[in-house]
Length: 529
Image (cartoon, rainbow, N blue to C red; front, top):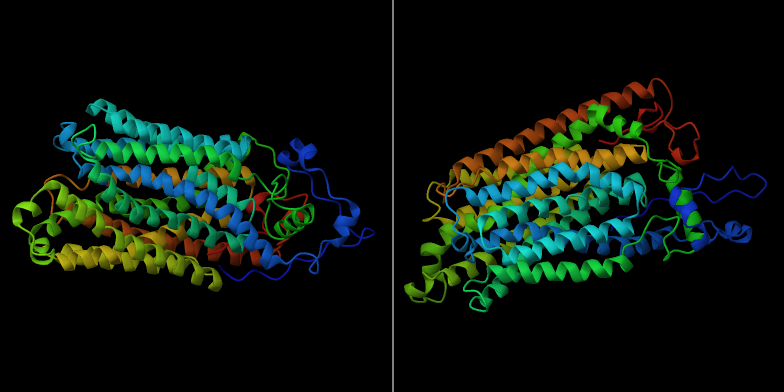
């Protein structure tokens, strides 16, 4: 974890204490549940009473694992279709041509359409209700994918899986903004997003084991990949009604002293303590802000490499590694055994694990350094360039069958750059957009715009393009270089806007104490880049 910031200022004595910030809607709705702090409790809240480092650790342990588990399940349930394919999915459903790719595309169509509405629902309800409910819904859909009998069922299941999963990531990014100060959000979002890399690694292990259930009820094991992983999601989602917490004003795991202290530290640099009611005007503010569209374009240029990597890694590895590399290295087994689908599939699943593990490490490392140096764009750009090296290696290897190790090395570079660059890109609106509704919409806009890249990406790794996949790898490389351009543009625009505002008025960080705050349009706000 990163070092905590200096202790927040203690509350003033009763004689000089400024008027309390208005209650949030959740606070007013559930005041009877939590009560209010007594005057003696308020007097005790200060540096000597609250250890901020310990409090941050407490928040991290209560919040991050809970939502991280949900996102791991989300990414597992969306990407396990790649594992299922090599366990016989395409053959059993009679897929021809690019019908498999169509199924992948339909997922992102549903995802893109419903992200903004899902975050509006989150704003109007609570995290404890909305996030577990979404998880149950997609768990049901994911389970039903295991019993589809034809292409129509597969297409419908993929679409509704996208619909039900669409609200989780933008919802959690907004959720973090109501708990953590601006400087603290990036690392937490990156840590949360790193669950995607864990899901990729964990998914390979699960698919390897579940694949051995071939012959139980069905000839191939892909049914059980969907069913067992979907049922696990439902079980965890039911428990999530108890381990997902709402906002600081009503969360049961913090004391009244900690509640007041959290509100005080949040008001020192964000709008999280404001009593902002939902209005469509605040929704329009996000839609009219060019910066919100640029944040979306930043993720758009990463989503194509991100999702094509997770959806097609198994296929990219399997083509060369199922050939002479396995013949030379795996215990000198008989070629007839190596030629069987089950054996090839199992080793292809296991070979996906190390690149994802490397991505997990690079994501956390880059996020930590970025937050400590207070630099965003430079690390996004650097990570995108690092991933570009991977695709250059993949494209330059003219003989993946003869030199599979070269292509495998390229997958490490790709994963090691894609995941940290994506995590940092996703943190930008959470850090820079002020106004609760505007931020919730901006987060959802970013994911929607971003996943349009994934819609395109699902059509690029075509059936007969292997083992080099020149079209897919070339698009991914182009998008990564596009991210370098977009991130550079954002850097210069945000820096220029800060310079312009500094000439007008000094920065004000105690946003929560201002009654005339107008969000990030206020000239006293400064952007982070």
